[in-house]
Length: 354
Image (tube, rainbow, N blue to C red; front, side, top):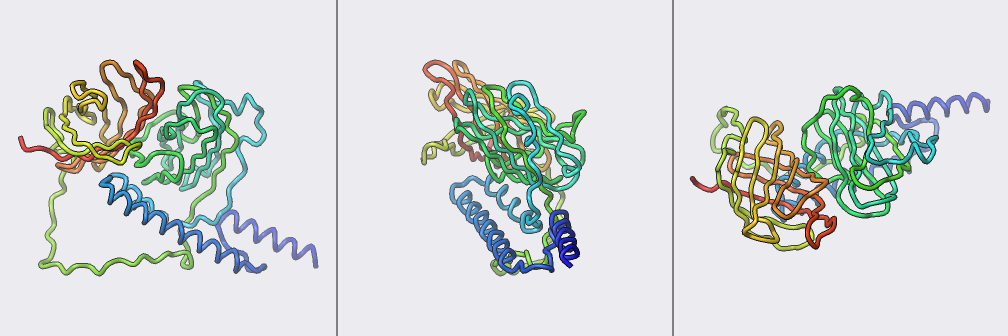
């Protein structure tokens, strides 16, 4: 009898680990209640974050959070985390430096999954760089937020169409993927300093079940005065032309104040453009922002240049939609009287008439 019951429990556990199917052989009411409560709390937290970004006029971040929330509501997150990929590694195998170190997560990366990375900082104050497998045999390269915290924790929800920056990585994450020889491997490295990775765990995300759906109270739709007519699809970057001039607000994350900033497009080519603004430490000094253009008006910041200053670990991105351009950034600034100072902020710009 005992052996039979143990067999039932093992089978129920296997079903739960692989598919998130709650067992019927034991009392799981409390566990289900806690799971639903945690799911509702996270959905509400994402909605509050969306409202805060809207209030701060950070439209690109607000859109990213809302997209993450809508995708989260379609998924189930009750499957437990898998084994730690570095549990059997020695100190040398856990060390992360300038050379890329590869880890094999297995078949789980062929579908949607969640990834957690925990690492301790050993030297320096640079970010941890990651090459993340994406379903469809692609990879995307990301960096953690600048800082000098002794321990980093990264949490990502990875899907073919959307990657959610749940923790430790700035949002929005641009949808610019790289093609390489080993798209199924996870790679970690650090351009400055060293880390010791203590944990890498993954788990699959599955379609949400009926009892996991979180209802959102939507305002009643406004009546349309007339049926909507089909419109021609417009390129969101069609007004991003060379020498075009823009104006708007710039905000540093460490201050609550907005400053007016003018900008101009110094160079525009297929898939790339350079934007020039005034430096924050000298209005007569120009700061050049280098961008790559992705699909749907997504842009990714790839570099920052300024006379007398240099910038490392540059990351960020945003959107271009007709006459509106917005992006956030994070980097380390070096130069006279400045040693590896983290800088971050955002821009909201509008095209000026010619």
